Length: 86
Image (cartoon, rainbow, N blue to C red; front, side, top):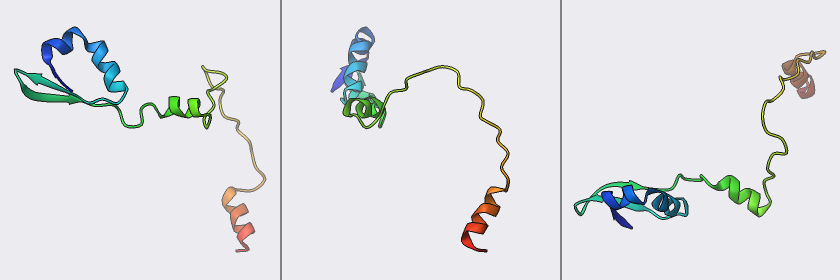
């Protein structure tokens, strides 16, 4: 879809909604293409995943707790080497 600068300025929200729905908007100045507005690749994949059921939205939002500082009996590399028999 080609749209002039003045029309874009007056109806920006309308055209951004069209872009969000997958349309490409070519911005023209006196009939000459100057720019293209395109959707962000994969920008809506979270919403699609939630809608299709393969993603679950978070139950809680906000501050995360600090990670636990656990002390193991052996180092990870030593456990891997032991498992491999080296």
